[in-house]
Every structure is written in C-alpha cells, then in structure tokens.
Image (cartoon, rainbow, N blue to C red; front, side, top):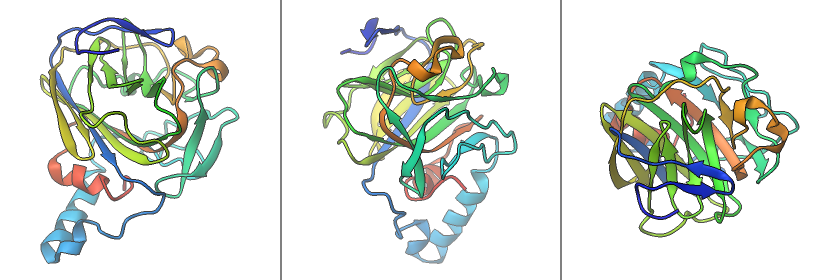
Amino acid sequence: MTGAFRSESLDGVTLRSSLWGLAALVVCGCGGSTLSNKGLGDGGPDGAADAGSAATSLREALVGAWSFDGDAKDHSSNMFDLDTRTLRFVNGKFGKGLQLAGEGTAIAQRTKNDPALDVASGDFAVSFWVDFAVTDAAQFVAVKGYGDSGWFVGWAKTEWAYGLPTGSTFVPPGGSPSANTFHHVVFQRSGATMQLFVDSKSLGTKPATAGAASGDPFQVGGYAPGGVAADHAQSVVNGVVDDLAIWRRTLVSEELAYLDTHPVP
C-alpha cells in the first residue's frame, strides 16, 4: 500500500482510505525492555513537577489501560478485561508484554461489544508499545471494527495505517521500523486533525471525518470480524504489544513526553 488516499488489500483485508477530518499517531522507537531512568524529572525541580503532573493528568478521561504485565486486565476504572485465549506473556517494554504470532493465529479481545470504546467520533488518543519480529506484513495493533464502521491503527507492510473507519497511511521517512525493538505509538485525534509521530517526530497530519460506531468487540493484535474466529485472525501482529491505553481526549506534549519513558500510570 503506497500513497495516502487509496484502497488496497492488506493480506486479505482491504484498507479503504479517503479524505475525512484530521487526528495524531505517535511512534517512538525505544529499544530494550527496561524502563529508562531518564524521565522528565531528571531535569531538576521543574522537570520533576512536570512528570508528576503528567502522571496525574494521564488518569483523566482514561477509557482503558492494559499493561499486559502477566495478564490482560484493564487497569482503568472501566474494567474492560481482555480474553487472551492461549496467548503468552513475555518480556515487554515495561515488565511483561503480550506475545502474538502472526497471520492466522490468536488475538486478544473483549468478549462483547463495549460502546464506550467507540471513540472515533470525537477527540481521542491511543498509546501502545510494539516490537515487531518482522515488518513485511499487515499488523493491526488496536482494532474496534473495520470496513464500514469502527476504528483501527497498525502497521501496513511499508506504512503506518489507520481507519475511522475510512482512513489513510503515514509513510515513515526512514523506512520501516526496526524489528526486535520496541516502538512507542500514540494515535490521536484533535478536532479535525490526525497526526503520526515516529520516534517522537511527526510524520505529518491528515484530515479526518466523524467515525461510525461498530458492533465488533475491541481487539488487540489483529482483526477477527465480529469477534468470530479470534483464534485464526487476520493482520495479526508478529511480535509483542505492551502498555496499551485509550483516552477520550487528546494528549498534550507533556503527557506524550512522559509516555515515551514511562508506562501508563
């Protein structure tokens, strides 16, 4: 899939793209599985205050938060725990992460539809860490419906892709993200604006239109239409997903910087 507004097939899943309003996706390539000790507080009292403020504000308007630190429980107040089927937890960016095995294998998902996770019609943000074993296949990380409704964000062979439900792609100027390295991704919408950041650098902005709600369950690591056949899903991540969270608002720069070096508080 090349170019921004076109319709193509990603390993059997069609990504439909069209102009529609604007939103933001952040990808920070940060290798390793240990927490950096260079947080916002390392710059003195002001930095410490900024970090503390961000840690507090990131709990506001939090829809769901999954640390995958040995389980798939939702650590927000909404308790949207995921069914992980036979999936394993391995070393992640922060503690443990969710391991997925590529096309046609199992994904994690909710056991029912949760309308609260249909966030695409207004401002929202999605943050996660992903470590791809390979990057030559479509790999959807967070999915709440696909095609005519819902939203998704993930990797599309050579580009980062999204849909709300229609969408487009962002081409990384440095090529595909390095494999076997954790990358931080934040996808967010602010009004009519969408944006993608890779390694804390913007890949530009795209227009966005209001999204349509989906009856599909929320899924992590791939897509199984209607939640059926989640053991044999499409566009499945081959690698590890860690520290996924969703907000019903846009994140500010201090919060984005905090998430580059910290798990979701």
